[in-house]
Image (cartoon, rainbow, N blue to C red):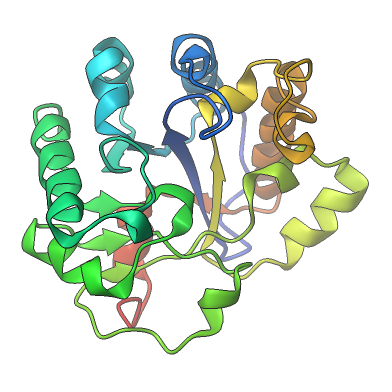
Length: 249
């Protein structure tokens, strides 16, 4: 386990993983859950940091051993919807079923109170569905997206936005690290298990495939070391939400 500095920076960092099919909608496989997720779990174990795994219901059905392992190793289990269908395309009946059915599956492993919509796109009109299903935290907003500047909806959910998109973490350190040092706390980073698989020879979009595989895993380790050396505190997202005043606004 890496020796860390005291929490001198006052910065909180949440490492989050969107456990889903391989690079939707471009691929249809599950190599990320089969090959990438175990690599992430081993990395977090070696570095002694907790993470939050926003997991689709389909992923939990296909790979129950991965879900059981991440819970056993102390990581937070969150919901990422059932099928990774974008919530803006769903009817109210479909959205309710996605939330309800995923909750029923995931809560057989652990309490689940945190949610992230696929593609960080959750219509305000569906937030009451999360509240009714017992969710307390929503991380379906990206600070780097235009809708982050809209007036926030009225909700009891504590909303903790993602700080940067995952492909930023695969950039060269000279470009990546100055950006990461400027991010406001809590810093919420996310990756996908499929990024830990070498997809460079696939025909998917360039920013999705570039730097995947060993480079992506090494880059994430570097990011953990960057914040760790500054004394940052690594928290599960529900813990960070509880510590942020006014996060529900």
